[in-house]
Image (cartoon, rainbow, N blue to C red; front, side):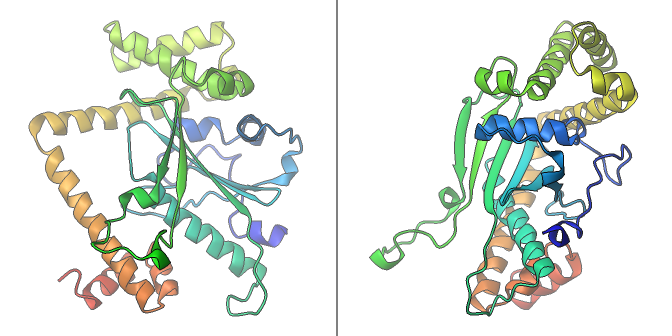
Length: 309
């Protein structure tokens, strides 16, 4: 039903964003490209763009991260994230994103959580596209359950954890997952563009020169031409912003500051894990979900449970 979609309108036709956009998301804001990507992953043949509804959570913020792309298609809830560096915590992030998406779905359709009938839910799919410089397999699966602390005792009744989230991680660096690239040309072109930039950087060019040379080469080879001809300046700006962030991260590691930042993030994750357990035990799921984009409420709950002083 369209009333589920209306709460999160499709903003794919707008170039300007309230927050910094990622190059990957900028390219795949086009519904034709999204359908091509979905068909390549699912071996399907959807052609009608009107059946695809963008559900990307524009304003949801968790530990500084934003959701990249989410959409609804034929009772499938598809969530995808792009990662330029390796992150083993994607399943945990997926839990929060899916929780908010399903909450919107139930609210907009007027379903009763306390009713006697089972609520029909769209089938979740979660894919992470990785193109960092760290060597990773072409395909791997991350599971939320891998992060759970093992109990000192075991019970057959609770042999399997009550919660699971699986993230399929696909390596989209140049030369990886060739079959997928052959079936989804926009993904192959994005991979090729990034590869050309990295080659230029290795050759000693400045970041500005590297991206300019890559753009010129791609235009000659008919790669990302629809994007580069119309939005060359935006593409260059987005890459340089992402490159500056990566360079800043490397500088912090060299100075030994990165370890402290990681410890702070880890402490934040541990606090959130404690809050989740405590709130679920008290049946306060609603407040927990609202706290994801309400920092004051989150701080209030952390203090209330004695997790943070």
